[in-house]
Image (cartoon, rainbow, N blue to C red; front, side, top):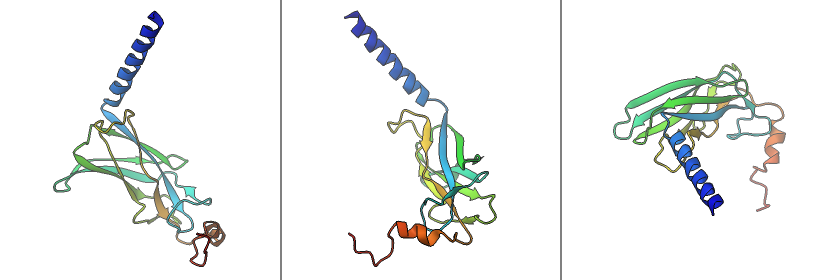
Length: 163
């Protein structure tokens, strides 16, 4: 019986530690920035990730859309970013957005894939202080020669009746 009590106490303390971790004053927004080498609108097997791309997190008030909070970050050599965001932004609309690419052949803003909404509050059932954003993209100026073959792998042509 004592072992059972000890296990319950351990679980209770672990839960408390997890909750206190989520109540920290920072969230960490994580994601990747890629180059859409085929101008396909999604990641493919020839996707390359963009190092040193600038990314910004912005939070705006829900009523007038006024900017409340903004912070920038940069991707690492793998195209991954982690941006610390201070405070809880429960009553704001927050997005992460791709600002600029260091690749001159892949620096066109890809509208529709250049921003992603994120929830930055502890009042949503998520214990972790990490928030993962959808991948952000820039468009390659000229698609790679292999792209026609790559896109055929996805069977995107209208002539395919395999449904």
